[in-house]
Amino acid sequence: MRMPALILAVMAATLLGPPIRPQEGATPASKDQTNESIKKVKELRKERIAVLRERTDAFEAEFKNARATIHEMLQARQQLIEAELETATTEAERVDLYKNLVVMLKVYESIADDRHKAGRGTKSGVLKVKAMRLEAELHLEQAKMKVAKAGR
Image 1 (cartoon, rainbow, N blue to C red):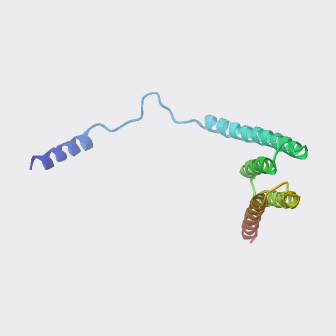
Image 2 (image 1 turned 30 degrees about the vertical axis):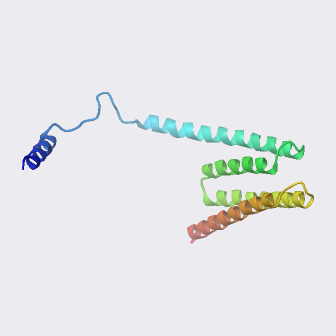
Image 3 (image 1 turned 180 degrees about the vertical axis):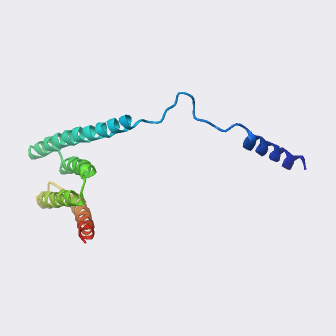
């Protein structure tokens, strides 16, 4: 019987006590700080894309000189495309990015297949590139549907 009374006393003290207030000196973010953060995010995204583009170009050059694998090159390209998709502001831009990705992956798929036939690559490598291409084609079709819905 003493337990319910104790629980009621604690609850009453909590409810009747002073309201909880934010820490003193803590101020909500101002509009200037928010705008500054938005600007900083945009700058960082642009810089990231530039670095990823340079990295992708480096891997492509290394691949041509047999110093990098097709999978390293593909991973770099995929990271670049994902970064570009993050900065795309319209579905039409995303459609263009996915179209370019599909075209590029078809070329890489052909290269991987040729390397497999020549005994310098694996079947799993070909299938990995093919799976990436199919995923890109799915995203392309989904982006096209969004554009069509928005156009109605």
